[in-house]
Image (cartoon, rainbow, N blue to C red; front, side):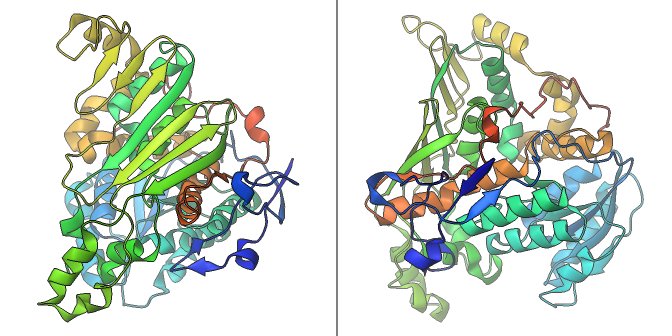
Length: 477
C-alpha cells in the first residue's frame, strides 16, 4: 500500500508557526480540486497500527509532560483507574509540577511519589522520557510541542497519549504515523468528546442501524473563551492568543469532528476526500487587543494582528459521498455548543441544546421527557456506559467523559487489546487544521485530505469496542 505527498515547503512555504500554504493529495498523480498542487513524497505503510495490540501491562507506568490545568484533570481521572502508577512529572514551571504531585497525593487511593522534572530546563522532558520505567507518556503541553514530544516518546520505547490537536501541520501528521508504524508504539489523541455519553450512545445507534444509512453530520465547538484566551498570564506565554494570530482557519475542530468521523467509519470503511473552509472576519480579538494595550504594553504587538476569523465553517465530503459540516467559534458570546447532529435515511439525533431524537418528521423531536426517547436511550446505551458511566460522572472531568477516556486507555493497555483511537485518527483528524488553513487562504477552494492509512481504510476493521466484547476488566477505584 502506497500513498505519496508533495513537499509543501517547496511550493508554498509557511506562514506564522507552521501554516502549510499548499495543497494536498494523498494519491499518486492526483491533483487537488481547484488546481492546488498534488503530493510528492512517497510513504509506504511499514506496519498497520489499526487493530494492533501491544503486549499487556498489568501495571501501566505513566509519566506526564506539561502539568497545567488540563493535564491535572486527566491526572485526577487516571488516579482513579486501577493499575496506574505515576513515575514522573515534567513542567518548565516548578509550581505546576508541584500542584500535579499534590493532586496525585490527594486523589490516588494508592500512595505514589513520582519524580519531578521541573528545574526550568526546556528539554527536561527528554530526560524524563529516557527513563526505562515508563510505559506511557501523557502530553499536556502547548500545541506546538505535541508532535515533537509524542515522536520522542515513541522513539524512546513508550506509548504516547497527547492532548488535542496531536499535530498542527501535514508534516507533523506524517511524522506521527511513520514513527508509530516504525516503533509499533501507540500514539493516541485524547479526544475526550468521543467518550461523551450521548456521543457514545449515538455511535452505538449508528452501528446498530438506527439511523439507516448515514447521510450527514454536523459538529462544532462554540465556547466563549475570549476572556481566558486574552487574559494576561492565563496561558503560559499566551500561546492560545498567539496561535490565533498566526493563521486563519478551523484551529480547534476536533471536538465536533472526531465523533462524526467515528460514526461514519472514517479510516475503517470510509475516508475523508475533500474539504472546503471559510472564515468570517475577526470581529472581536483585535478590538480587545487594542483596548488591553492601553493599560498593558504586552498587547501592543497585537494591535494590528490579523487574528483568526471569529467563525469558521468547513465542509468535508467522504469517499462514500457523505458530508460533515464543522463550525468553530471560541470568541463570540454564544452558549456552549458542540452541535453533534447525526442525519440518516431513517432517523436523526442532535445533542445541543438538549438531546433530541426524531424518527418521524411529522411527529417532530423527541426529548428526554418523552417515553419513546427513554425507550430508545435504554435500548442503545452502550455497555461501556453501563460499566463505568455512573462512577465516571461521580469522579468528574467534563461530566465524566475524561474519566471514561482515561479508563478505556488504561484498560486497553492492561488487557493488550487494540486501541479505540489509533495514530491514524490522531493524524487524520489533526490534518483538518492545515487543510482548513489552506482552503481559507485560497478563498474556500477545495483541498484533498491525505489518507494516512495508505488505502488500508478499505479493509480495516472497526476499533472502538463500545460493547466491550474485549477488555473491560479494569476497575475504577
